[in-house]
Length: 319
Image (cartoon, rainbow, N blue to C red):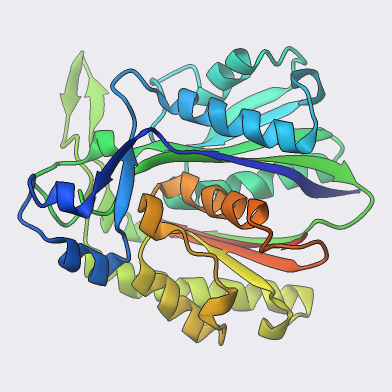
């Protein structure tokens, strides 16, 4: 038994914050942001718009494409680092909002920017083990709520959004393989320290990132994990039709593609339109490529991501 993606969906909040808008907020310029990140704009969730609301819209679109109803879904995994609340999980909240009453498992996956890759691999293993037949896998974030708008090293890079896929059991291979890694020794490079204790917020509630350290680490481990995965599958770079990377920074994406010997013509890029949406970025980019007709049946699609933890991983799909 295998699992295949049969539907994709995405959602971006209505409010758009351009680089020119940020020039009025923080000491920066459009050119400075764009040349260093490839980002032109990002979307910001409305005041009352929760992560589960973003996930809901993306899920409905994925379900529509897949032709599945709530009663068909027996597994819900939401990859997020910005849940609606401490508990219950955003996945359980989404399950309720979608009207899913199958009693199947619903839980969150916290692997920050690597969350969608981790969640997709987990859902694939559930299906292969016969514990689920139709899974909804979502990456959704409201990251702008973690930003210090006076810190130009972070506030210009991140945005809000969600992407979703429907994964279903199949006799035809879909997800061909995955390789995931974590190394907590590097947890200080990218973090949000805040925690709740005794009714108060302890630690900084804002995101911190050592940009240079993250860049060097990301380029190194992303190339390594792809090599590991392809070696396991006895495939080479030439077998990859499309790379759908975590949309964090154009320089990281370009450096990774170069290390893999891939032309940028084979890379799906959406970072300019929504910035780094953490766990939401890969499914957002994937949905864009599917709906535009770039990704076609029979092609091999590589997903890869790296994020705070540090975590990193790759998944190879046969579309």
